[in-house]
Image 1 (spheres, helix red, strand yellow):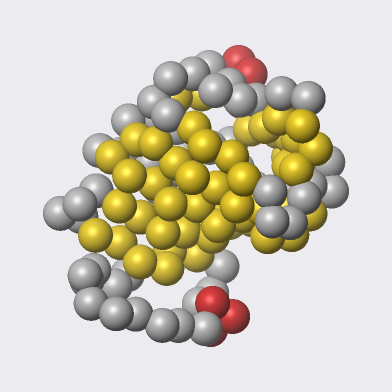
Image 2: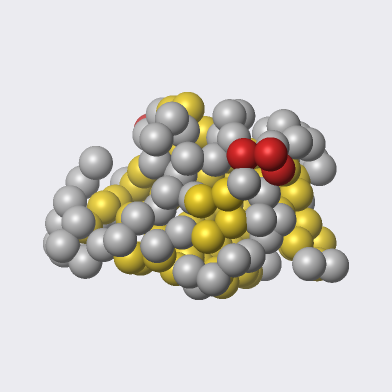
Length: 125
């Protein structure tokens, strides 16, 4: 992971998808590409891939996030979000998010932790 305040340009296709095992702490099935990280600022720029039918439970985390849908469909709170659409979430409880067709998003997290806190009983995956 690059950690820098300097200019950075990269081809995202040259960064491999990885199973998310500890970064987001969501139910299994999510893949990530960490594009840039600045621990001093508490910022992580990340691409996240959700498989078709994935359900992201109601959750909190010790950070805020800005998300832009790149591919597929993200469903939240009566909104069907498609490429170019935007979501903002704070450290208050938010979600659930559903991905009926699968989805790829770009997200910027800023704060202490990206780790999602959610009720393990609400795992529908």
